[in-house]
Image (cartoon, rainbow, N blue to C red; front, side):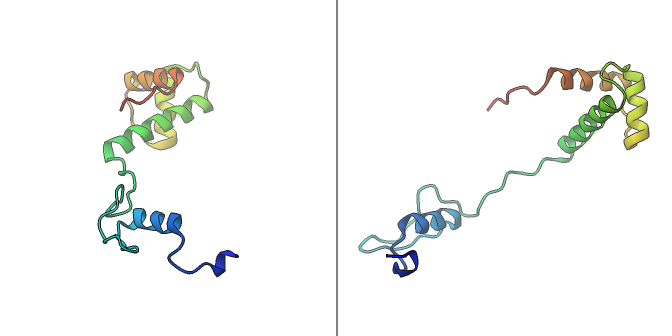
Length: 112
């Protein structure tokens, strides 16, 4: 029997997926309608980063691009001047050095 020949309401996996996404409760057979375990009232999206996180990410990206443009071993002062010229961000030399150290270390595992 082809998929198109199956009567509506007999595709439990598809129906369950739709109910979980929408949070709707559907009555089936002799079961009463009720909330679905694991259903969201609204399909969720990850929370957008706040302004401070976006700014930190922008500074990290700018320092990384400056390191790629100049050299990985360029002085923090030279990197800070390149960041200012390329992106307009005025990052203090001590912060550029810290960002460069984090970039060199690589990503750390998230706790949570």
